Length: 368
Image (tube, rainbow, N blue to C red; front, side, top):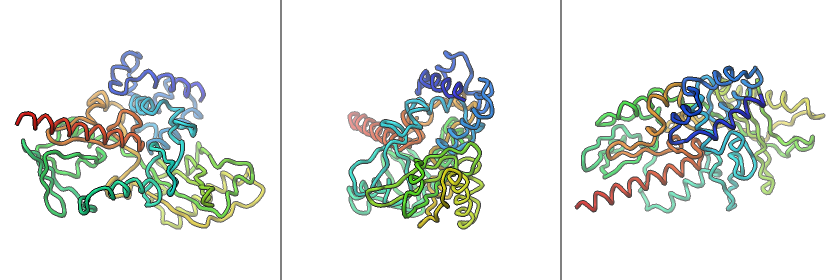
């Protein structure tokens, strides 16, 4: 397991995030033709190594290792500073800091949670800066028609015309919109073939941080269990104590099909099985249980971002994700080179898209 981890770490730092295909050729192996399962087996990894890599792909993409191109995952991790940094709780790590509403210390790399007291507070604060009625919610886009000088956006609540359109949909949802003219073949392939991971979370709130009483930190990784990862997400200053459980990949997909009471029962059993042997008292009942299933969300249908299966990078390249088409620009964390799949990647992609639009409009204006 350590051998595979260290090899993957060394390899990912040799990847050019803007041209991973060229990097793979220089490394002398066709990593895009391999899944992460193939990668482990080809490098001599055993059951423990594969189980560890399964935690990586599940926790970071909501996918099983056989669903992800090894080259894509190498590129994904390079963009976050390496597998060790992305999994780290230390400063600059992907798990460093969380949003505490009412404080000023936030960190853009924390993954989004669909609530009004966590990262949703960013969206609400930004919306407050805009003029009234400038944001239209629950308004599905049906069609985007691009002519030479403008774009017509047809929605369930009427049509809108603009000079440019910025699309932030995950690529699998491109096919829910009728683009006129149709998207280029490589863009269409992204919509048809990228894998949208399954990520769900269940937060168990408690009256006290009982796991600390036994000297435990609350972090667990299950090689063969329902919740791939649990974390202590308490806000001690607010007197709020909680464990966060990630339900990802195949186990998460199965869990999401259960009834709410069955989902809760399954998680409580997992917590008891995981922490019970290490404590000398019964695991207490939670005071509150909250779950979030991103695949049920109309506007995203998955989390954190779609990933490429084996062979797709070789066909379309990673640059296709962010490539504009006429007056249509594409953003979203999936399109970022750096910290793809994280909030920081989303912000970076938004800045890139805004700059593209500004430059295009300025260029048009200078011709008049």
